[in-house]
Amino acid sequence: MTDRPLKQIHLAAHFPGVNNTTVWTDPASRSQIEFASFRHLAQTAERGRFDFFFLAEGLRLREVNGLIHDLDVVGRPESITVLGALAAVTTHLGLAATVNATFNEPYELARRFASLDHLSGGRAAWNVVTSSDAFTGANFRRGGYLDHADRYTRAAEFVQLTREFWDGEDVRHRGPQFDVEGRLPLPRPPQGHPVVIQAGDSDEGREFAAAAADIIFSRHSTLASGQAFHADVKRRLAAYGRKPDELKIMPGVTYVLGDTEDEATERAAEIRRAQVGPQTAIAFLEQVWGIDLSGHDPDGPLPAADPVADSTLVQGRTKLGDPLEIAARWRAVAAEKQLTSRELVIEVTGRQSFIGTPATVAAQLDAYVQNDAADGFILVPHLTPGGLDDFVDQVVPLLQERGVFRTEYTGTTLRDHLGLPVPGRR
Ligand SMILES: Cc1cc2nc3c(=O)[nH]c(=O)nc-3n(C[C@H](O)[C@H](O)[C@H](O)COP(=O)(O)O)c2cc1C
Image (cartoon, rainbow, N blue to C red; front, side, top):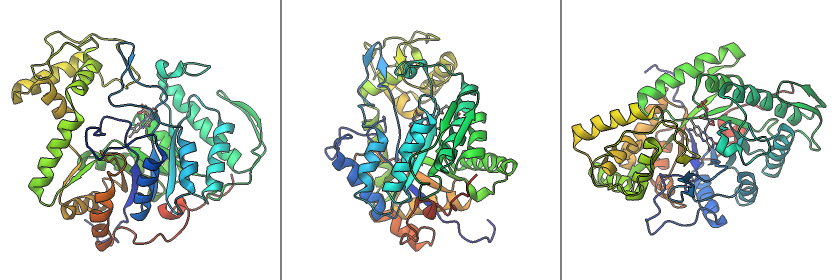
């Protein structure tokens, strides 16, 4: 490491309850829809002096074989509505909503985020996602109509227009995606432009982030892949006249704490078993195999049949890759380690990112940031809504002692927390 000053860590809280990291069997598990749950997690994050609170988005419930699959996605309220309510019960915490740029319109979205920024005193952030699978698109007038490359063309034009609306300009725009004229009925938001987050991983996604985003929510949560991703994206900034610290990289990470290393490891294994119950294991296999496996024994070997390509059995989930190739790889792992179907799913869906005592977890998080594998983390707890309590009580104080995390907010807006200036008018 060089002798540069210590980097400060940025922290965000991802609201759980909508994915298969959530453990529903824990007696402490509560509703993912009631306001009390959102308030608990947000106020815990603010007590921990986090940068922001984060809501993902899913526009259609996943289906298996034409039936709603309610094991891991059980519905969620609309994000900006939730954040508007949280703005009233928090004072400093940033409030980030994931909203799709493929199915919405710039004027409407600019208006909603500008409103949230005004009402919260400069704490709004927009996570721009583009996912446009036809299944989700069928919810909308235009349907699932954009190819992958066109989605980012649209997203770039969308964000540019949104910024013009935020600037309070008279917008007159004729482009490939939009034909709009007008202005927002609101003054420029307190942050100038609410913070823009990006969460795609393709080459187009990275380029879009380098051009237009303040934060990347990444999947690269190991040290080596984090460093490679960090170097790749930061290198792209210069072409847009931007400096490396103008874009923060925050991987989504999970963690498990224990009083000793052994206790944490044991708890982590227990949580993995709870996250991947027998039905979840079957649902996961169906996603790859593309055939009905409801009669398959999760405690026996992997299905003997080969997967079916281009199956529509599972809808509303990102495809993991070539099914035949994945199945071959998994068969090899299962044979080598003597795993049942369920054990295999536990194995290939990965362990938690950070496991240990509060001291070792704090040290690892710090090392990731100082060694440029990340600028901070979006923490994904496995329990709604109390999953961050132990982290805030036990890990945050240690990060503060290390001098790498704020002990008090030094500003009031999310841009203040991130060290990002208010952008000038364009
Ligand atoms: C860490 C991460 C989180 C994401 N969260 C969401 C989400 O909450 N809602 C959504 O519709 N898409 C989400 N996406 C999907 C991306 O926005 C994007 O549509 C998808 O990754 C395809 O773009 P890409 O090919 O550039 O990766 C997420 C992607 C990543 C990498």
